[in-house]
Image (cartoon, rainbow, N blue to C red):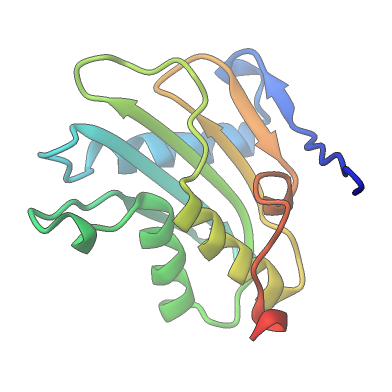
Length: 160
């Protein structure tokens, strides 16, 4: 038997003001998207903003449904919209902000497993990483230079 060690490297910004201006604007778009979330069941609001290679910003928010599996996360809402409407553009940077409605979250909230897999699909498709910034409603912001930091064992078409 052999053990392997997997490490991830993230940058930590202590405060929103430490972010580069372009990323502050992208995160503000994620805040706007978060405010438009439809989350009557979980009351957990998530917003994502995606910067495309053409400079366009695509926003997505979580959309819940009484039939729970029918809802969709903010990250996938944004990614699938971008893929459907801008298929030749690459996904450059994603900003994510999430919070509970009645208890503002100050801990960085990463994408869920399904969203990580969706982001991974686009990294493989475009042969280029997606830089991901994520935070709660306030507080520290984490930056990952690639989804592979958050999902080290990617499931890709190579296994099919």
